Amino acid sequence: MAKEKNTGSGYVKKETMVTVAIIALGIGFLGGAVLSAYKFGAEESLPPAGPPQQQVAPGIPQANAPSPDIAGQIPILERETAMNPDNVGAWTQLGNLYFDTGQFQKAIDAYKKSLALNPNNADVWTDMGVMYRRNGQPLEAIQAFDKAMEVDPRHEVSRFNKGIVLMHDLEDSKSAIQAWTELVEMNPLAKTPNGQPLKDMIERFKGNRVEN
Image (cartoon, rainbow, N blue to C red):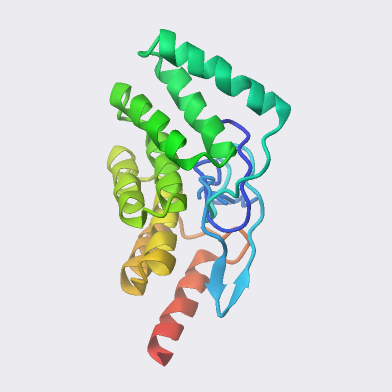
């Protein structure tokens, strides 16, 4: 995704990686960033995504009005990909701009072109998963996150986002907790975007399952 991707509340972008010592979110899945919010009884909004490869958080970006700069870059990259369809970087950047401007299906299509040329980019798989989720296709989102983890088994954002989709879209709390537990096993200091230790969030959801 673009190197400075903004998200709304909720899910995570690839830039929103959970790290051992730094949590800034997105993910805000993330980002990829990237659900609307954590739902612990009352919804809690998540902070915007930070710099690439520095945090993980959940959330899918909201469709904010594009800046003139972004709006001007889109037709340039559209022309570039039309003239040079093998330019994997251009397809990725075009997908990122569609991502940032809330054009979900166009972002998915651009990411597919990028991945057809280079299927070994876990970040692009994750961003496409975020766009699938935002486009109302949670099963496809899970498949994309799984591909990201296949490419990079230690890809934290894809694991976090998979848990978000399983918990809140597919209502599969058992599988969501498993996804997050595997993340904590990889990174015991992983935190949610609001700074809560991920292991504490897992225990909270486990408690809710017992009560229900």
